[in-house]
Length: 344
Image (spheres, rainbow, N blue to C red):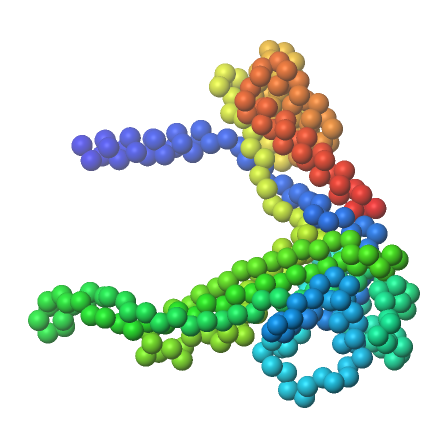
């Protein structure tokens, strides 16, 4: 009986395996949220750290960053907030460099190229002219907060000698760190802020009170959170690549030519597979053939033909999956147009 059941299970697994639709991995370049095509040479200025009782934004925040370039009145020893702000500046520069999309000028380079010509009247336009930057990026950490909270946790333990269970109270402590960061892009031709974005997040760590010395330092928690902001910031400002899958539609007619085309797809012989899919679609209106032809058009980089082909499938069959893919392809076309503008 067990052998019969095992055989049925194995056959079922093979059935599931062969019933799976063919999936094609593709690398897609996505446009950035903000169009930085005219602002690709960037001067990154120092990020400001939180100062209790004071809040600044926009032009005042930029003026603070410019004044910091003078290097005057800087403390000999930096506090946690200042160190984390400096870390943020460095990570912004690194994240934008890693996109391969921007040419960057650091705060130190700006100060050197300005050659002491920085004053309270210096503007973004002045910096742009001096370092040949099209834009300035600066910002601040408006929130850096760490708090410890103690509580009592009930635990059930087993006595090693008697084997009896008992409830004990354990003193616990939770450390919560919160970070808020904002940045702005200032065009150096006009001096105007062309974009501004913010991030906010928190992390927690628990430990028994007795071992509270094992809790991570607040500064380490801050920098870990800032590290999570950087990929998001990079995607907002520069085109990026993602790995996606395009899934073919399974053929319910068991047409041997469809099976042949599917095997060609698995072998990455896309042109030959496309010819078969189009032939079957034109011959008997097989919805899977028409759908798959559109997907192959997209995979080989002909998005306009993919849209046209999927539209014909939608108009002829009203298939729900084809309708969803048609709208996805239209969205991909819009992304492609935005990307072309950003890469121009």
